[in-house]
Every structure is written in structure tokens, then in C-alpha cells.
Length: 427
Image 1 (spheres, rainbow, N blue to C red):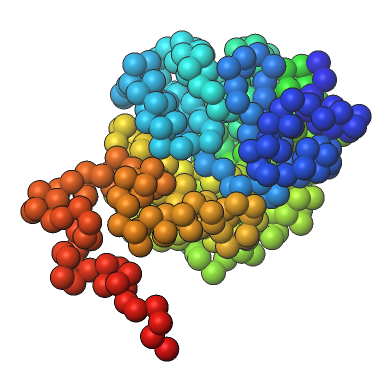
Image 2: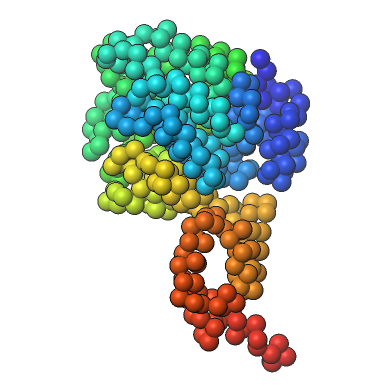
């Protein structure tokens, strides 16, 4: 199998590259060069037949990923497909199935079959369900799961390859320890077995599977900070340096790779974190969770994450992993999934405008013209959340506000109506 990266290095512009170029208003040859350099990835498993490809990279608009998936405590295939629909309707660019409960295989297949955007997974979660204790997991069992994900059409996988045995003592000094599920499971496996991380030790075997199906690697940050006190510490940056080495090995093998990032980070440290990743990982796309800029907002962490995500995207991050209001509290429901996607679409869009990406502000300018004209239907067509906005507007109109006036001021005090009536000949 020839991967997008290998095609690009041979000078071939694929259909996927052309589609990305059209969506991003970029030249197709430029897209090819960015893919060839490893600065842009197009997650596109050859077995994901209903996929509409996207580009993830610094030259493209900032993307949004939505995490869904069940646990041993809640949800089923029907529930996850409802979450999938909500995420897609709200504008998610990618979806990850993070299921850890029953029927993981059927849930994943159901999601892939109905999902036109790239689908990601964390194979270690399913592998952990195969054994009573994580330390009982064999290398062959783990790789059999990764192979099955590739066969079924998973476009990118999070693998915590950069967390080494030498890094674990650094994490034990933290306030919150290891908060990544994959990171914690990997650390336990290494300590109980007295061995190195199997995904690091057998990284070439992983690359072989990825190349076979053109799975993109999302090199996970198993030591991401889980609280502000642990941000930008020795454990986080030791793992990041290892991930940079793995990016280079992936590119040499013809496998596309992006790098995952923190986590909980004070606002003033976000730009430094992004620039450090770009430097250590040779410009590989950066995929960040948040960052969350305060620890005390449970129930509102989608807002906290969007604040940090805007700065991260402005500084150079390529994709934001959404956080929902349920973060730190439980699995999100459909309403919370929708709220998380919309909050992070706002963050990404704000960063795209600030970075002056092609066409980023056109929708805003058209919305402003419609707003000045009090053209409500056109406004709803242009908004990120048309249905939510319409509900608020309709509630306001229940007070018999005329349609040609704004719903806040009424016709007498409507500034825009008054402004349109001003004499343009006045000095």
C-alpha cells in the first residue's frame, strides 16, 4: 500500500490532496509539498470508503475533533450514534471513538460506517478489555487489536509510544500524577513487567501496520499535565522530545504523524508550549486537548478549553480536541457533545481569522451585512449554531417585536435602523 506521504514524495497529487486543496483554498501542488514534508497530514485509511478527506496542518484551517464512546458505566451503540450525529451536525471535523465498555468492536464499526469525517481510536483501550489486569496484556494481543482497527477503516490512532520507563518517576512527583488513561495503563504495564513501553520497543512493527492501511499516527501525550501545577514540567517535555524522534522515524517509514499536546496549561504558557512542539517535532501538526486554563470550572470546562484552544490555534496548533461541560464529571450526553463542538468551532474560527487564513472572515463580514439589514433569515444561515440562535430569537419575538427591528431595542431605539436612516450627505 502506498500512503499519502509516499505519494507526495513521489510528486503525485492524489484525489485526497486535491479535495483538501479545494476546501482550504490552496494550490494542490502546495498541499502535496506540505504532505511530503510531514507538516500536513490527510488521515485517510484505504478501508474508510465513505470518507471526505480533511487536511490537518499549520497551513490549513484549524480543525475540531469530538470524542465519543461508551464506558462500562453507560451508553450503547444507539447512544453513540446519536452523539456522532450531534457532533457532525455541529461541525466536528474528526471524531474519536474512545469506548472502554462492552461491544467496543460493534460500536467502532457502526461509527466508521456512518462517519464521513476521519475516525480515530485508542487501540490500547480495547486491548485492556481483553485481560483482567493490564500487565497481563501481551505484545501480540496489542498489535492484533491495532491490525483490526486498520482493517475496519480507522483513519488515525492515538498511541502513547513516547512514554518511556525512565519518564515514570518524573510523573510520580506531580500534583495530579498521570491523568491520561493510555499513559497510566502503559506506565503500569511497564512497572509490573519490568520492561520498556512495547509500542516504543516495537515501533517498526507499528509502522508496518500503519503503512499497510495508511493509518495516521497521533502520537499521544501520556504525560500531559492534568492540572496547572504540573504544566510544562520535566515529565511532559521529556516525553515530547521522544515524540519528536518518533515523528522523524514515522516520516522515514512513509507514515503520516501528528503530535498530541496538553492538557491543563496556564494561559501565559500556551504559546511557549506550541512553539516548543513545533521545534522539537519538526513542524508536525499539533493536536491539543484544550489547553484548559483553570482547574476550578467543572461543569463549564468547554468554555475554559475554548479559551486556551484559541491561543493554541493562534500560536500554531492544527487541531483542537473538544472538551465538553461534562469534563471531569462524567461521559457527555448529546447536548453536551453539541456544546463542546460549538465552543471549539468558535475557538478555531477566531484563530483562523487572526491568522488571516484564506476566506476565514468572509462569513463574518456577510453576517455583519445581514445583521445591519436586519435580515434575520440570512443571519441564521450564516451562524455557527442556527437552531440555537433561532430559538432565542423566536422567544424574543413572542413579545410582539416587529421583524424589521432588533429584538433587544425595539423599533424606536434600534441603532441600526436609525443609522440606516441617517442622511449620508451630512459632513
